[in-house]
Amino acid sequence: MDTTFSADDLTFRDEVKSFLSDTLTDKFRQRLANKKNFKETQVEWQRALNNKGWFAPGWPEQYGGANWTPTQNFIYENELSLADAPSIVPFGVSMVATVIYNFGSEEQKARFLPRILKSEDWWCQGYSEPGSGSDLASLKTKAVLDGDDYIVNGAKIWTTYAQYADWIFCLVRTDSSGRKQEGISFLLIDMKTPGVTVNPIIGIDNQYTLNEVEFNNVRVPKANLIGEQDKGWTYAKVLLSHERTAIAGVAESKRNLADLKKIIATEMSGGKALIEDPSIRKNITNIEIELMALEFTELRVVASIASGKGAGAESSLLKIKGTEIQQSLQKLRMDLSGTFMGVLALNEDTSGHPFANTARINYMYGRASTIYGGSNEVQKNIIAKSVLGL
Image 1 (cartoon, rainbow, N blue to C red):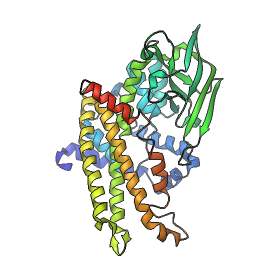
Image 2 (image 1 turned 30 degrees about the horizontal axis):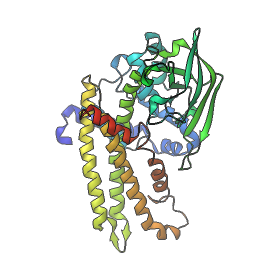
Image 3 (image 1 turned 135 degrees about the vertical axis):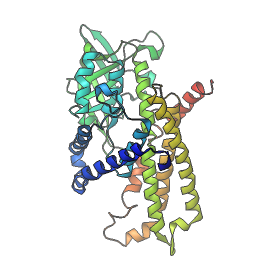
Image 4 (image 1 turned 30 degrees about the vertical axis):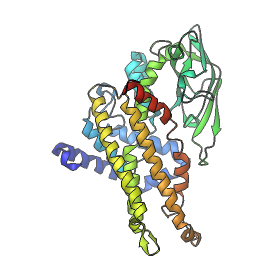
């Protein structure tokens, strides 16, 4: 897409490339690969971005945002992906911060936003519950006002990285008398508060990223309520639109597709490169066409957000197609891994082979992508109501 870039855009792209080359050293990547260093290296990376002024480019400039054009945002995200940069943990900078600077009090903004920028606070998300996932408004975690505190009881589930978190932002039930969407409030809860318990969940990919978080008579200051009581559903919808746009993962899919194309151009089967197999070429081409169409849709959404409009139902469309493309890539990689099983069995060290370790893990974890952030079936309902008027 270089033909659409101005000279200033190309200069900016070169600056991003140079920064990433200098920052993402081999030594840093080696430490990042050690899961024991996960939070430490993640914070180091986020602080490097913040020192450059690039950690929260989408924030309003007055709070530390970069005031970039949609094209600069596009370039930045693509260069991060091409450099295989660590993904930013989104719960603080991309999610709760959006709610705080849009709906929080001045005191809340002053208290929380600088600490998020400096990676001094690690956040997790308290939305889904054991009995409330896609139908999020049916949540039952309850908060009862008691003087200057809310008393919170209930549980949240599938809470990513809660084991590292300092704070959790939660949707809680504060009124059960009306429509279920009208009695929900948005609370910020310190994870060190007595009564908060984190229970690990080991995923199907045998990784530990998920948790159940229990609340047993947890006292939360009323000052930690975002906006008005019982209006949390309104705030949550803003957050969800940003989350769904991010879940689409267009830039990451572009990098994964490019990597896969390189692999099949060199890997041999029956004396021929895999790319010469017509069925493989067809699968690759279909994914590439869908990804290109999705990329232009993402650009339209980014431009809409930059002009002050909401992402709207387009965020649901991005989420649906983005996660379907991710799963298509994961499935193709998994299918191709079978081609190499005989070769791998003859090798003592297969850790460097592109299909040896990652295909199975990515495939397993990727099964959830069409569910989290609101299942794709729910997103189709949103599109039907918002776009088609059904």
